[in-house]
Image (tube, rainbow, N blue to C red; front, side):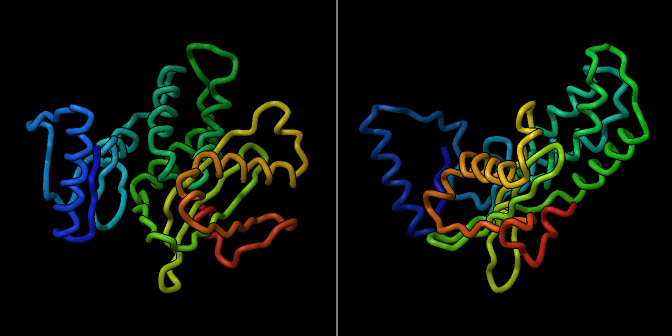
Length: 228
């Protein structure tokens, strides 16, 4: 449970409302597991502060310090760690394609190719500079950039305060079976559907402008968030 406020006065009022709700439902809190009046802290595996949402440094370190996978279990461990941080990773699925290829066949020992090694090092480099995710203001217009590759659909939700472009959330999904044969326009529609489902709270609270790197849609001038 997290209660956040913009000012100390608002925070006291919000806490009063929260305690009223807890009282109505006869719920109790463990004082040893509560923290009040803090400006930052860990919540649901992420670091929350006034600056925004950051990836848990421990989870990032677990990827950066990981040795080169030698078995199927090692790769599954790697992709699992990536999955826990996908909201921070641009085109996460595309970055993991070489690892998925190495898993094909179901053998315990894997064939670790040069492509796998390059992808592994690129992933570590990216995670060492994992982006800070911004938080939108109430009613702010947001922008959703869609991207389609031969193996996945991806998107990034951003906000543009004072001409800056700040990422809010990254989404990525591997194309499966029949989806791989979809025409580009249908894959683009799939990217929008996947993103809308994943980002439902943002779609409900904000106006969102959708842009894409495909000729069939409106192209953005700056694709830096989906270019990594």
